[in-house]
Amino acid sequence: MARRGSHLFGVALLVSLVESAVVLHVWVTCDIGGINATVSLLSVVLFGFPALLVAHMVVLGLVRWIAGRKRRRSLGVLLVQTLLVLAGAFVVLTVVATPDEPSRTCVDGVPEWWPEWLPHQSHGA
Image 1 (cartoon, rainbow, N blue to C red):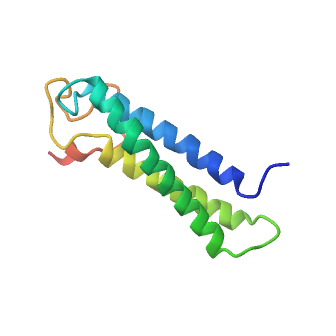
Image 2 (cartoon, one colour):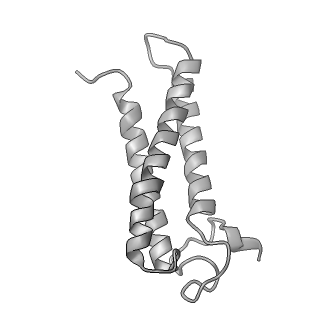
Image 3 (tube, rainbow, N blue to C red):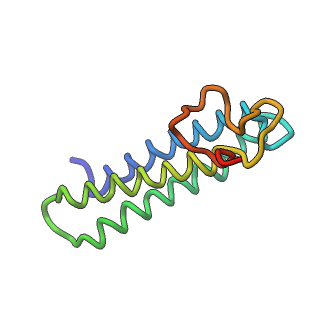
């Protein structure tokens, strides 16, 4: 039987992995970090991923704690947790992943594969 709260860790882990993968892919494509892809990889693996995982765990755990220690799961709590995780992912993808200024390889400040509907830092520039 799964421990209580193990699903929170799973959700936080999955979202953090996806966010880290997208950030790393953008940073490598746009040559963020300046030296090479290894610097970007180490930055994301050693600092970015753990920070995202802790942040998501804190948010998910805090919502669960605020909602109280109910014996049954509430759809409202699940909805709030989902919305907060999605909001955090949106901020990471639109602010952290994208560079402030255009680079040699990312003239618009984002890679060519970046969806047009998703804003980015250099969107207004």
